[in-house]
Amino acid sequence: MKILVTGAAGFIGAHCVLRLVRDGHQVIGLDNFNGYYDPQLKHDRVDWVRKQIGDFQLATIDLADAAALEALFASERPQVVVHLAAQAGVRYSLENPRAYLHSNLDGFLNILECCRQYPVEHLIYASSSSVYGANQRTPYSVQDGVNHPLSLYAATKKANELMAHSYSHLFGIACTGLRFFTVYGPWGRPDMSPIQFAKAISEGSPLKLFNYGEHQRDFTYIDDIIESIERLIELAPRANPEWNREQPDPASSMAPWRLFNIGGQHPVALKTYLALLEKHLGQKAVVELLPLQPGDVLNTCAEASDLAQATGFQPRIELDEGLGRFVAWFRDYYPTAYRPRAVRG
Image (cartoon, rainbow, N blue to C red; front, side):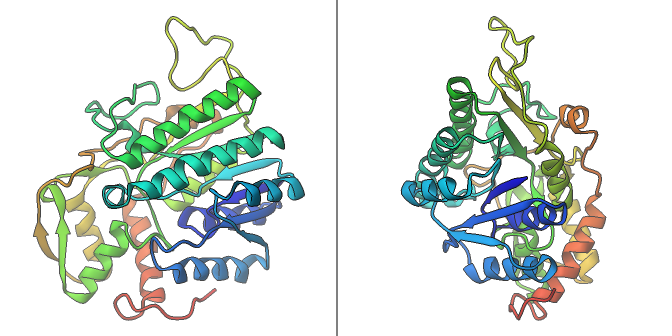
């Protein structure tokens, strides 16, 4: 199939491009290489992918540039769109909220419009576990209401789900939203805890544990995320014939629209996570315990039986194994603490 992957130079996007090309798909990548974190890491991810699969088409386009995006759709006519591009980060949304409106709302609207004007067989887009917000009952289920986001980032992801539903209803676009739970692994983002923690431990600098390390997170290894996406590509949703307007199912619809959680389903306390990272690095952390940060969710845990039922797959890589793989990459890419060198294949 011809598949457009947005955010192709990002953490999940680069791994997705690699897998899809290996599976025989024709992939068109899109990224704007913005400066939210060092763009060199994004270029190095692309080099890493190309060293394994050869060259692939990669367009440098900002999602908010409606004309450029439309021109790409008009010339390439993708059959499937895997939309992974977004302004990420919960805490950054407190500092620069307009970046989230630019990328996550304007950009997503442009994706939907292009999918309407140049019809696609399936739009898969990244949502987030952060949409569960103030919900306290775990595991989080796609059957739960998600009306109390704790950050603007979470609010934009919830908005994406609603926007996708409206376009699915009005124009028949088959849309699948994926609520990712704490994705980690090689080539991860430097603003996320694996690299931040590994950097601090390697340098012997203080490592900040918010909420005094009492958070729990449902860590999900990158390969499990990609396997889920790959299996869902050919499972475009259809209207649910049993959908009841009086008792509406939040995860499906009378339109061809569906939501899935993708998570490891085994929440781990941050203190336990840190201990495993220390073990693989062979060093102890200097820990600074701090109170809960604004916008942070206390605990996350995915209920992902719907994913297993639809695809025959559920995340399976345990945190200990996944962190071992991450540390091997970290030591290679940052041979001395957080000092990048040339990428290896």
